[in-house]
Length: 312
Length: 298
View 1: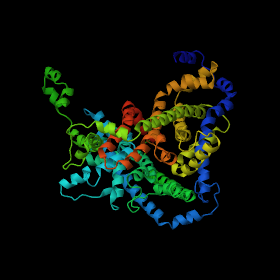
View 2: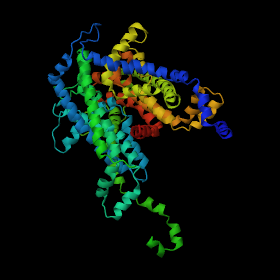
View 3: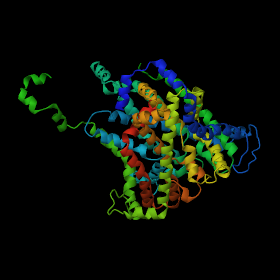
View 4: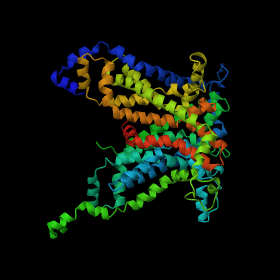
């Protein structure tokens, strides 16, 4: 390294000389560097996008090589599929609960953690640790916490005289238990994002607000929330995309049941493709999800640009 | 400050400001301790259950601290399912995925950052466009492609083979983007000087750029490892037999078979969580940077 720096100092090349020297092998070395990655992404990333679109107009059972064209039949079938409609509805309810809940929990904990007191790094580590817990680990833990007969949640409710609930076995409660476990699992992520954003908020703003007589809550509402809006926009988009793709927790805890109460779009399309072997139909559902994700993300960006406060 | 006027210099010296805060702990501890407790309860509960007897897990009121620690639960869980092979499979898949991602994304990311070649702009946009497509859209054709490759190209790489878990994930568009952004921040003069000396492009990348990019490489390694280790849907689709299962998948079959033996299930859960916790504590700042940095700026 030192030798390199020496070189830079010794002979500062003019820009044009460098450009001439570097031109020769650029196309060759450039393509040599990107070809392995390009080939892999073309096969496993690009090709499947087009293929999936084709599949959505075909009938395929994943086994027989012949995949007859069925036109828009798969899409028309989706529109009249009651289970798909229910799955869309559950996905919307789940997203509408999970995203705001995670953001509120995240911002409150981040604000509490954004101070220099003894032991703060221990508190922060504890808040971050859920990032290391996989969806499957979290789902297994929460199945045990919410177990009807011996789970700690029902036992705690029993202490205060509330009768035991069925939770994941109750169609009216199962989706909310899944919301709880995923909010817990994403708390670490939300806290890290908000804490990073909070550290960019200058203390002088709070001092000035305090001089003007603003209380804690007033300065939280008028300073913290607006200055965190870019982080909030990022989190809203990121969490929404992940919420629309909910699968692991549903697969592990309820398999979409009881009575389809937790069937969500990705669970439904996985089931159609790999259990019912109706891959064309599943591909159509996947494309509907893709388009919905694009539209929702676009709307979030537009709304966010209008309301998010960017410092220049 | 006014108070200082009335105190003598000696008194001030004997009472440095720092020591005051030591005697008066911040009231925020009263907020942070309950928050931390609530966040950690699920993990502590898992740990406690994993060390209880089956009878203790059924007792009411709950046994908060098991009377005698049942370490044999771990041995029993280990014997009840081939966790050794799940662990080895997960390690093979994750480690190979991380190594290959670092190598291929470094090469491509460097070319997109520094090398001018025909079609660079267009190729970059096309590769990055794949980032917008959810995995659920591509997974069905990906399954068919891996199956076809297994039948026609390389018979070792079929469905239900570790290769099916590794090959589609050898490189990520995100990794290319992430490293390209970092390489762009390195002063170009260093590379130009080496180029003037006749060092090849590859030489510049290996000797100059990569040593300066260790934090970015570490962050990408952590993100990739986390993704690979916790990956569930793709292994669920392509793996059918127990000897090929990775940890998350193995855990679900174990859960199906041992639903009522919660202490064994929790012991198995702890075992599968430990490697991630080790990585987390060893690389916490890269975890934090991966989220706080790439998330917001990327």
